[in-house]
Image (tube, rainbow, N blue to C red; front, side, top):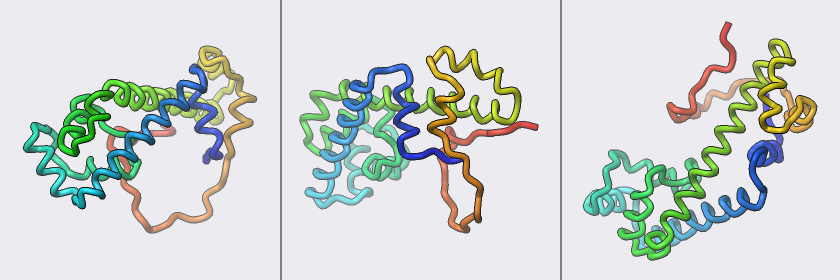
Length: 178
């Protein structure tokens, strides 16, 4: 099952105003751009930044997190203190002064993505079982099965590429139980 590009945005704004979601994405993009700019302008690598963060009291055990924040693999730090620590290490006052704003935006987007994933999971199960079961869940989000049908495209797998894509352990899930 694949989603078109508009589907994720459509499902993401199910229970919220689009203005807030757009603002959150803008803030996350701004945060990432400031981070990336300062990182590259200081001619740092992940190892150097990791050492600076650790010497400033950072409690994470891997430097891969720093790359994930820059690349967009994750929306940004899950801990408020990480934003301020990064701001102190890279001398970005914006991060220190507005850490709560950035943190709230990242949390908001993560929460909405989880809600969208739950709805899609219910939809997937409903297509395999009785579609009427999902109606009560969808009513909570003010949606209908027809609305989900409009934004979801079902595609068949042509082949499986040999390249391995690693996912985060907390994103691992079972679609169907038999």
